[in-house]
Length: 151
Image (cartoon, rainbow, N blue to C red; front, side):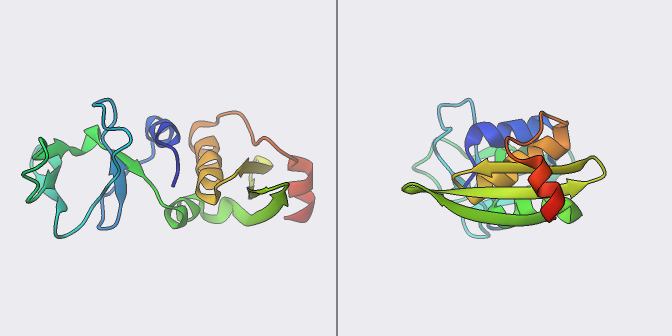
């Protein structure tokens, strides 16, 4: 799962969220950042209203939260969703062991050239790559010439 701060950066960069069952999200800036919610047809549903989408918390009398406007929630896209959002720019995902840890590397290739993004978690590496694509933020942190020659 990507960190909340990366999800907030993706949202600020223009990542649109069309809520669907199974999507995970947080409600930031309400002392609930560490509370991850999952949309479900049973307990947490999206209700479309003329004024916009509302995320309703059904049967949650123990929570002091009945509903929240969708823009107040921040989507935590899953690894497969991030990969889909990268589209044809995504070249491949590599995993390598570094000491006792693993590093995941996402390689992109587009009209601007090749780039690579690394993180311990594959979803976070995808998220960093997508942030770069959406915002034009600084490039990947590793070996872009290697990415270009092996893509």
